Amino acid sequence: MGKKILITTVAGNTIMDSDSYIGSDINGNLYAKKAFEINIGEKLYFKKEAIEKTLDDIENDLMESPRYKVARSCLFIEEQTALSYHLNNSHKLMNLDDEEKVLVIYDLVKDNIKSRQTVKNWLSGNVIMPKDKQVLTLLSEIAPELESYKNVFLAEDITKKEMIDGIEIEIHYGHERYNLYDLYINIRRGIMHYLAPAKGEGG
Image: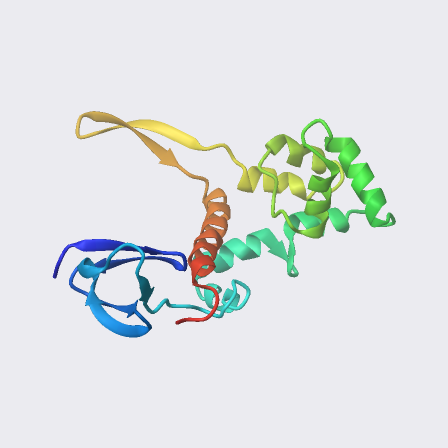
């Protein structure tokens, strides 16, 4: 097996062994050439894997993971984000239309957020949970249930110094449900990163 070679084309990049074969178009004819024989400017053919599924399509597969399932059940209620669910079902907002809800919430947290669009994202479920504990404290004035999410998801990180084999090291103790929040986000980001370059048709 030869050394690795990066093949760069307008359709994408791939890394191949230098002695692997790749299709090259020479004067309209297709020839098999080894990767190390490819010259700049050649028209190449290589198979690019593709996947037709979306993130939503594989949600059921993700739910087979116990940790992912627990994380999602903590962050969502009846297919809504817990944040959206509690805000929209708050007795203080229940009789208001969407714009009135935005105005009431924004007036409460305007010193802690950039725009009313942030509030709209909360209500619509486009944002799972604000990271600012102070924001959740303010929102709990409208939806008291959100106070517990501040404690559960946004508990401060705990780092302790301990002696191990005579060496003092810092050990990070993550809060279990804070980690579940990170778990949910990171798994979905990882899947989206995998799907993004593989969308379309293989060829």
